Length: 179
Image (tube, rainbow, N blue to C red):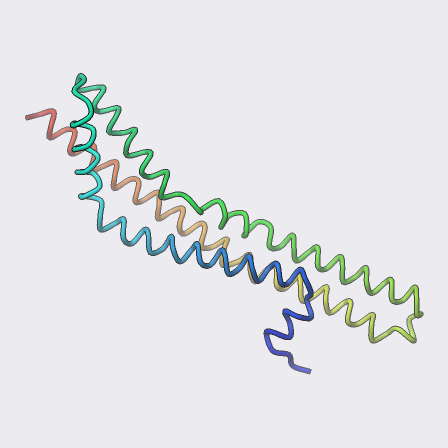
């Protein structure tokens, strides 16, 4: 018998509901991060200019202190961009564990059915418990895989973005020092 996705979610019980919620949350954050990286790649020059302008307005220290303040401001800015990445990593990590929890619950229900009704009378209920076990295992893996891949891709993209910022700041500091 074929089931729809919604039927599989209902068959998986509360563990599947949790996985669906985590999936929606994680995919939303990943989409937001993909867009944020695209936008930030276009704004690098403007952000670096703003950082330099702000630091030069607020500080009239020696050149080295201004340089340190510029690096500190850039690091703080990039750290804000990292917000949400841990959530993606956590979802990728706990989704298979939640699937395993559903597996254990399903197998436990199956054995409780056998002990109560006997195998011949409880075969249908036994099968539904095993079905729950398999559905939640699959659900946990389905949620985990795109989050794991997305997290690694985004981590690499943020590292490239950070490198671009660093190069632009070094070039600007070098230009200003030579003037």
